[in-house]
View 1 (tube, rainbow, N blue to C red):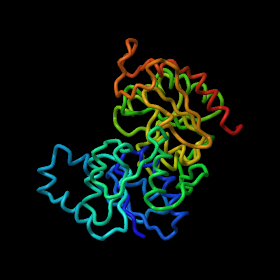
View 2 (view 1 turned 120 degrees about the vertical axis):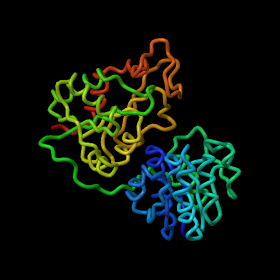
View 3 (view 1 turned 180 degrees about the horizontal axis):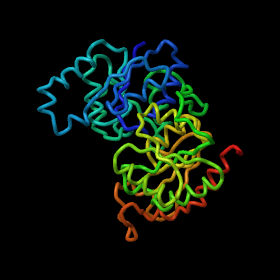
Length: 340
């Protein structure tokens, strides 16, 4: 059975899909998966052993630049790749109008969430087979429900298995290291640099090296500020997702704001603490045996807003996260670390 999975982005959403792939392969060993994903994340699907082929999409890059993209023939080539073969099932696990359109462009029966379950209810109009899943459940659970219903096997009762094998070699280190993931695209999810610096000092005093990943130039500047304020810590070189996965998988532990790398670390089984403000950890929090999620109890949490509108807010300092002291975060992480 050949299945085309449509799950375009983002990094955390892709990670949430992995346990459902593991479930499906165990229940239906004959299944062969192909995955349509945004080009920025093409390194993630092949990490799971059930995925045979990745079809890159460039919808984000083409957005607002359709004319030059069309003139270059890129969208046409993408559609040809989608229609190269007929699939036994096309499963849209995103539940957005754009993902439903992509699913309908491929050849084969299309399945997805029903209107009450999809993130964008109109997306359900694009599916020949529609399935209801619990809206209030965590994203990992929702996807496991969807795959089980669409592929015809009982929903497993065991904990999520992300199915990721050991990955590559990290950058050499002379002592155990922690990774602090400070960067996020939402300012309402940011933990202030001074808090990261305090946490870095606590970790280095305990004998750990601290590594800070970055991708965009602004993220590097923020990491440099943290290192300067802490008087310690190390900037990693700019790495690809697979290289970052190797770093996260070999780390003694992680601390992260709500971002895709937090979910990747959890999927790899690395002990970690994730910090939540604007987003709801009950719905999209990092999932793993060695994970703890921390949040404060402000009445506005979780607000779901990209920018904090609290009267006490300032850029990069949402009060809900600013009220999480470094000492509390360090205590939570230390309880999950192996003794040095």
